[in-house]
Length: 77
Image (tube, rainbow, N blue to C red):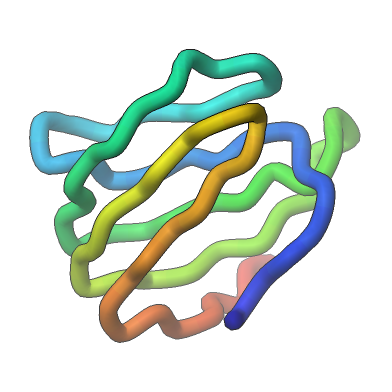
């Protein structure tokens, strides 16, 4: 587990293009391609980045679960 907690949203590299999940998003399961996953911790632009090699995301009951290969935290300025 590399991140757990309340967040404002999550931006992910979907296989058909990037997408974002916010509060009360409809349930989905989607494949992810290699790219950058961005966790928006709050509305004040606090975030965490992870480079991933691919994986899957599940959104259900306002909970986001990401199963990612090769997740590496990225420091941003």
